[in-house]
Amino acid sequence: MEIYKLDQNLTLYGFPVETFPNHIEAAFDKLISMLPVDPSRPYYGISQCTPAGMVYVAAAPLQPQDNPEPYGLNKYLMEQGDYLAIRVSEWRTKTHTIKSIFENLVADPRCDTNKPCVEIYLNDDEMLCLVKTKFNPESSAHAVAQEAISTFNETALTLQQQFAAFEDDVINQVPFTSSWTAGQVAEHLIISNMGFVEILTGPATETNRPPDELINRMKADFLNVNLKIEAADSVWPQNRVFQKEELLQSFQEVQQLISKAIVSLDLSKTCLAFKIPVYGYLTRLEAVYFVIYHTQRHINQLKKIHWALAKEPV
Image (cartoon, rainbow, N blue to C red):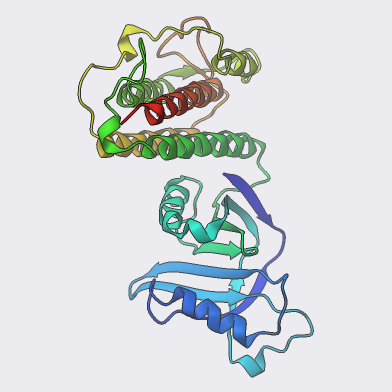
């Protein structure tokens, strides 16, 4: 996830799709055929849920020399400001994922749900999915929170995508000796991250050191593949049969809780609910990055498990 900055209002011209989502492609084909040929012109999809149902507009910017009147197009305004953005490459092969991408964006507490969702088709290969943020980008505290939540949500989405790549019938298979199953890795992360929800929202006090002091150290530890880290008994997963959809749902629930904590709490304060082994009491900012780097470590573990299971003979 990234922040897309629109420095000034953007005027677009287009028309609503007759039937959503069935006629989206036909609407863009019609719009492209109406406008002067311009290979560099991006195209925009603007969608918003209204009392009458979903309204989807196919639109595009016009060049200064273009006169919109002959085309009979409606005028639309994309407001200036900051947008939460996810970039999609080879989008033509991934149209089935766009709904879930927007669900993740809209679930972000920074999202202004009163504003429409925006798709920008930059070319035949690359597009952006955007939602407008409701926070003031000039605030330094918000800037810190934005960076933290962007990194967190990007990591959370990567985790969900990596776990979703497993077939339902293999998440409970042991890939190699002394390994957890994919389901156990997922449960471990859910237990651990739910614990950090309690840490983040628990008692806190003022901090007498830099709030980000331990972040680089934690990153170096968790992303060091040669460093053995033993999970505590309290976050050790059960040896049982897991259901893939239940785990994916839990991932999303935990993501929403942590996202809410990031944007609603003072990240500079020190958490007092639990003293983390090795690191001690973390600031809220450090706690968020503990979750991020710990999750990234286990994403790499899931990749190894997926590879190992794919190599097994049928």
